[in-house]
Length: 153
Image (cartoon, rainbow, N blue to C red):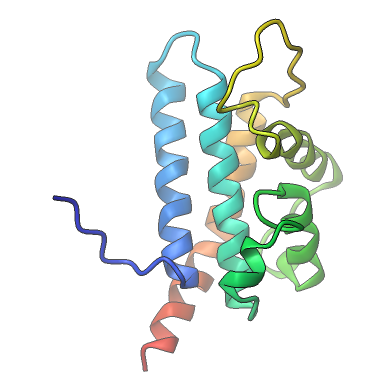
């Protein structure tokens, strides 16, 4: 029996999940040989949950986050987060935004979870995605965890 103490529908809960997916991706990246799509999927999920944690902190409801226009769309989530002040916490340069968008195309259409035989995948360098994800989590971690603590009082 696994008991997770963090509630999901809070910025802290989403950040907790983002950190776990990031750690899982890092472990696979360090230890697995010839594993690529699952690692990209895990980093994509970490980015998605990190951005959603920030958006929850900024007052976006969980129901809004689940809607089709945001859902698993990394580009739309990033755009919305940047419109709400993400740059006050995380510095993303234009190439980094482009890499999130590139990853997001494959991530959103589920090709990372359901391989298409003989398909061409357009993915950014894995080490760049790892660094972008680390940067995102580092910039938002305290903000999102404090947000949960403040809502408990």
